[in-house]
Structures are given as C-alpha cells and as structure tokens.
Length: 114
Length: 115
Image (cartoon, rainbow over all chains, first blue to last red; front, top):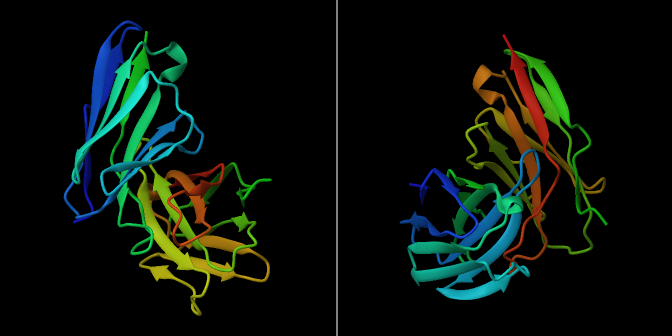
C-alpha cells in the first residue's frame, strides 16, 4: 500500500482565518514532507520531518506552521495567509533517505485564500 | 544552474503510439537517483519509475521505461502504447545524495493523448 491521504481536498479561507491541513500515511515511513505547487509549475519543498523532528525548513513564512504529532501524521497550520498563498499543497512520505528513495505523494489540498 | 531540464513544455501523441519525454540533469555527485512522476489534472503526483546512478540496466515498469544515458546525463522516459489516461503533466526529478531529502524537479512536460 503506497497511500498518503490528505484532508481536506479543497479549502477556501479568508486572510484572518486559522485552518489546518492534515496528512496521514501508514507505510511506516519516517520522513514526511510538505510541498507547495502553483499551477503548471513543479512542486516547491516547504518542510521535511524526519523521525518526527523538523529537519528542513525552506525559509517558509511563519504564517505556515508544521506539526508532526506522530510518525503517521503531519499537519500544516495556516494563519493570516495572503492571496498569493493560494496553491495546491502536497504532502509526501518516504523511508529515511539512507533506506529508501521514493517519495509518495498524497492527492493534495487545493487552497484558495480570499 | 538548472539541475533538471525538461525542454518539451507540451506534446501531443496519438493513442497506442509511443512517446519519449526528454530529461537532462546536471550533477557532479557520483551517487544520485532519477525519478519520473505523473500528475493528472486531479493533482496527485504519481511515482512512475526510478533509476539509480549505479544501476547497470535501464529501469522498466510496465509501459514505462527509462532510457538512461549516463555519459550524456540524460534520463528520458518512454511511454509505450499510449492511452487516453496517460494525458497528464510529467515531471523528471533528481536526488543528488542518497542521504538527501530534497528532490530537484524539472519544469514538467504536458502530454496530451489523442484518440
């Protein structure tokens, strides 16, 4: 099973709202990722968690706050977003880099910020 | 410098024909991995195929094969017997160090399969 699930599928929020994106995997992977993708562009890495610790933060604005409650779950908390943050947000998971190479992606959350 | 180059923004292919998507890469690391992903309009990134830099044979997965030419630094994806469901954006990606989490993606190629 190579399934990564994400909820919600679509999200519309105002600039003053607080919302969260959720991601779950049950493949026993120990690395989880958040990507942001604009239309017709490749995904851009935002955060990486490895063994439930934040390993990489690609200089993402603080209005995006990741959280990894356990090895299967990854959240992205959103607060005071801007319209330019509207995008497809993809979650991915993989084995630790020294054990596996393939990142498996979820279906994404399409976020619209009004 | 661009690490992954996909020079074909869009391609049309007739159903049941084969199509080759170009990908060239740039790295000085001797150990790296190359990936192809498919992204339909629904948004999900689907892993298709992987080639390691030390792999002796070209990778194949069903109708997908990777034409790996190490000296030319190219990793072209060949889709045989195209189907309407193959219409999607295709991304080539590279990981330069087996300990690295990061993937470098190309700009992508949109494939449209015609009936």
